[in-house]
Image: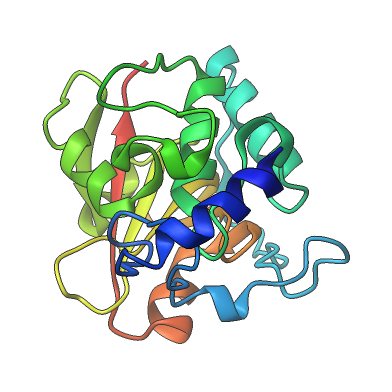
Length: 224
């Protein structure tokens, strides 16, 4: 079914410009995100951003919130083995589609501003675009509170993390916080999962210093 939809969208996509993950993903073919080339195959994931051993003075956060536990269980089940039969895939730019799925599992309800259209290419821009999601959440303080990296101590498991790889003011990538480690001296390490690039415990600091030097990172502290 999804292959049929993608094939049908190919002809329509030729009339649209490719905007990538920062903009509204068009019908295929579309531009891939800066991370797409670094994505690893879904099977036999190597170099996936898995967490390395950490020093003993760091303690990992835990949660007992059933909604967050359900969200994280979903994310860690489908970060590489895509749930494409249910949600489809935005080839080369699936990060926000995946984050939106996780929010539904967390308990968020779709509405006329944020929805899956039965096919990710027919979904709302807020469902499939990092920048559109950022702009939408900026108008919804009932759903999320914006944080920057100076607020890292306030980030919690299940929150959203967004990146501006080229410091242009838009949002180029979206992930879900899957692990937080805190030290006695106040240092905080944040790890996240996402599609494009497929990862389960990708290190925020590595992403903005080694993989994308000079990039900026932002968070959404989710309500409920």
